[in-house]
Image (cartoon, rainbow, N blue to C red; front, side):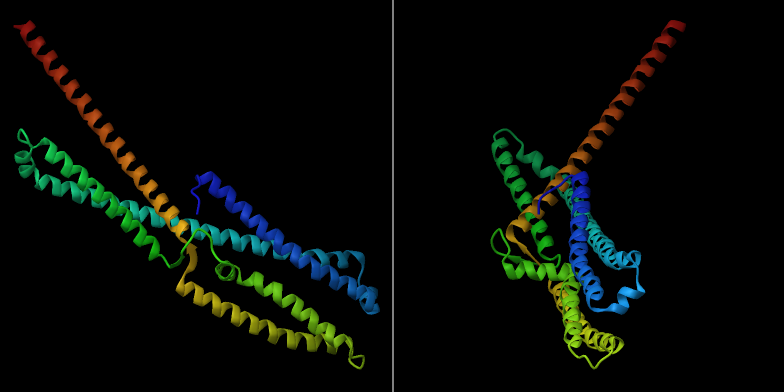
Length: 295
């Protein structure tokens, strides 16, 4: 799970949606073209009742619909995924900020003890203790980040690469309708091809038989696909240990950016307060000088 800038994330999302749309469009164009070609060759009634304009529409409209639908679904899915990641990082950064504030309050409560420890001869011990506390604090935050990632409905696979089964399961979860189209269209075509050998049936009856049997087959596939998708949604998608570490690093980066922004805001506020104090002192000196001059 690499870390991108917002512009790179937007470009990657658009590219993924474009690739998904083109893939679905090309897959749909093959059966639609073959269907129109077969109808032209084996159905005189189809050739007689249609013109080149309608035939062209029958060829290109299904791929255009598949392209638009798949691209939109991929885009919506990626947008929801990015929004979920951003919201997750925001919550963890806010948690870290509140944790830092609580730690600061605890340090204020221990100021009396620290003053005693800062007597001559205690500096090295205090510095060593402070470094140890900082290291433990960072380890605790990283561990919290990791626990948050692991509890975000994912299943971790050891190693840096998913197996074939894990990739298929993740693809199945994210693209059930693509799989349905990939399996359903050839199935319906095969059913119609099986009816074409029955010369005693009219074309309308062949289409009727194909519709009934194809509807049953497609609905059965749909129930199976959505059942497995529901299982994956409940159990979580598969991610590698490297993906978890990259996600933790991204959250740590968001935390550091937040702390840096807070530090800059604090320094800016201190600078403004210092400037106001200097301006106030200059005004007081000017007033005193004016009073002395008047006297």
